[in-house]
Structure formats: C-alpha cells, structure tokens
Image (tube, rainbow, N blue to C red; front, side, top):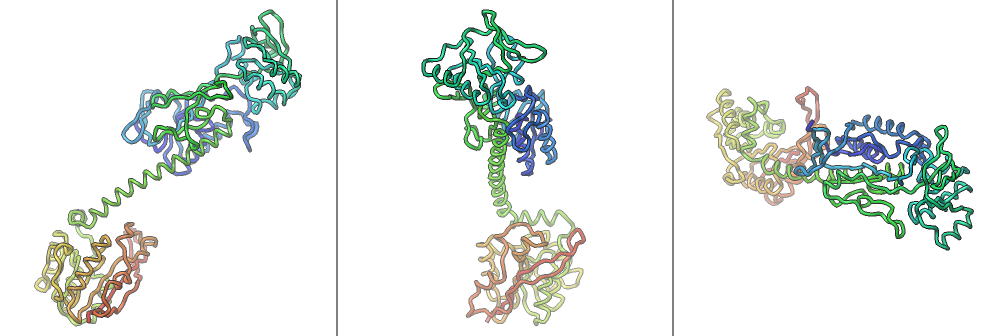
Length: 523
C-alpha cells in the first residue's frame, strides 16, 4: 500500500469522522486511520449531541463511518507509527506499509490519567465520572463523592452540587480546604471526608462506596475524579509539534497541541481537532472542530490546486502555439482536419473575383485548395512542416499544385509583404492578446487597396456553451474586438458578428459552434 490521498485523518472519533465527512463531500480523497480505542468507549451513552442525544458511542461512530463511506471516504484499522515530511506532503507508516497525504488532520484525542486507587479504573466511564455535563443527569439526586486530586476539586464539588444535594468531598491525599473554600462548601452542604482512600467498593457490578485507609466505608453511588488530560500526540511530536500545558486558574489540568481557530498548527499542512487540541471539548464540540478543520484544509488544497493550475496554464499558453506543439499534434494522427474548406471562408469568398490570396495558418490545405480551384493564386503559410507537406499532397491530388505557394513560416517573426494580397484569410488563429493584435495588424497591412480581410475565430461563448473548447479565455476574441483595431479611414467593416453553425463532435453528437467573423474591405 503506497497510495496518495488528499487528506489522511489520523483518529476515527467524532472530530475525525466529521472532518472526513466534510472532506469527502468536498470530493477529496480521504483515508481515515483509526486504532479503535475511543476515549468514551466505556460510557453507555453520548449526551448533549443535538439530534443524537443518548446514542451509544459505538453506534454514533458506526453511523459516522457509514456516512463517510457513502461519499467515498476510506478506512484502515491500525496505528500510525510515524509521520514524516515527503516532498510537499507527508508519508505515514502504518502496520508495515505506508501511505502519502497532501494534508494531515490529526484527531487522536487524549487519555485520562486516573489516580492510583484500587478499583477506580475498572469503573471508569460507568460510575466513576469526570464531567457533569456528560453524566450529571444520570446520577442526579444520587450520592456523589468528589475525589480530590488538586485544588480544583473544590470547584468540582460546587459544580456537581447542581445535580445532587448529596455531595461529599473526599480529600484522599489532598490538603484540607482553606477557610474560604471550607465556608463555600459548608454553605452548599458539601461535607468534607478526610483520609486516604484504600479502595473502591463494588457490589453486584455496581459502585457502593469507598473504603478509607482506616477501614471506614463511605457509601456512594458515583465517584467524580479530575483526571490528568494527556493528548495522544506521538505522531505530532514526530513532526515537531509539542503539547502545551493547559491552565485553569493557576493549576495545570492537562496538555494539548496548540492550533488556531481552524485547527491549523505551526507545521504547514497539519491540522488538529478534538481533544488532542482542546481538552475541554465534548463530542459535539469535537465534531464541530473537525468540520472547521476540514473546511480550512479544503481551502488550503484549493489554493494549492489553483497555484499548480496557474503554473500549468502558463506553460500551456507558452507552448501550445509554438511550432513543436503543432508538429506533435499533426504527427500524432494521419489527419487533423476534414480537408473541407472552412464554412465562413466559403460564405464570404464564393462571390469574390479571384486574385492573390494569403491563407494564414493553412494547416493541411483545405482552404488553400478550395481557393486555388476557384482561380485564386494562393500563398499558404503554416508553422508546421508536417501540415504543409500534407497540404502540398492534397493540392497535387486536386490538380492545383501550381497555383499554391506553400511557405513554412511563423508570421509573428516574418511579416507578410504589405499591400500584396486581394484576400487575407486567417481562420482560427488564437494567440495571447498582445501577439494576436500584432499579427492581425500585420495581416491587415498585407491587404491591397480594395482587398478583403477575413478573420474568423472561436467566439468566447464557446467557452461556456456546448462546444467545450480548451479553456483559454485570453486567447478568444470577438469580431468587434478585431474591428476596433481597424482605422475607419482605411477600412469599411462589412461584417463583425457572431455566427453559429452545427457540427458533429467525435461522439457523433450534433453541437453548435459559434464563430467570431470579421469581414472588412480596405479603402
């Protein structure tokens, strides 16, 4: 496995799945790598998640995974051993193989470090709790013991008093509250229990209290403990990101990876969301953070995609109209054009008296041969020697080879003779604006007095119509654009308009092309 994804999401909890969902819906290729160890696995239900209140954590994740998969997101079970820079992206080692990512969204969450009290960890998430907003309703009016682990335990006791009138503060190894805190506890009828706790008491798979070191048992239905909140940040540390301590007042309550409001870290291309970046975040908060990070990641990828597209577009513009590109195009197939004359040439020239004609960009000779067959003496100019060779063969087969002079030239470098032609025809000469104007000025100068200038191009409306032109808007022009550069004192504009014509595309479908047609007579 050595695939490249737009985004690899490390961690498949609420934050990771929310981010993966938004990115998949944004048509990004997404891989979620998850070790299957969600922080809230011991809990029975998820709460305060609007529309999903009371959903079992595993069920919520299963729903999320199905939603992500429905939009093309992929999953892999495993643990990321390492993540390293790889050119303009990242390479992740997963179970003996690797994947590449243009961007990383790390949502690995955190671990709760519990005090070393026998029996406490076994009841974690069931009747050993930490967050009143997650579990307070479920133990309302029950006997609740606050296991003191820091000076913030007084604050915890005051909070949990909102859900029950039977709250105790278990000092364990903590010092007794100072006079001010003791007064607040007394005012709320929160009793203080001194002495270390020896063990948690459990009967019939239900917590019944704690046993103190002196042998006394304090009857309880739930224990609340302030855990040390430690981010699962090994992958991020390997990329140069270090957790920073989080303070509540003057006390450290944990650590998290610093990031901005979108989850962007100081390492370009790496975002974080959920508890790894916000130790206070609940499930719904983490899901929102995942969405915010996904939107920022997608915007960042769009910016990169646009930069790459601009570079490619500039290269395309710089090379598409040069001789090597035309040679490659003509040599790639036996014939590029139909061999028939262009429709607007036929429409405008059929009734003209033959004379000297300059066919610019003559290609494989369809227009030049048609003109020669009607008595014109033609100079056919093209940038491609392959095209000219085919055109000469076409002319010989039609019996008009003696009426056509085939010239291999780039008229941007070698201007035609001024006032030498009764007809100058340029069919679908699309160039960058400055080059196009200079060339069209030279073509106009090549028209003899009384002669006709015929310029035909793909109309800009073909960019958004059914013709599906190569999208180079700067190369398109209207007939009015060309007419505006002709001096009225020297030119009579006979037509400057858009004309539609029906053609059959390579799939056999009838589509409409729109031509920009300029016809002008030199005074």
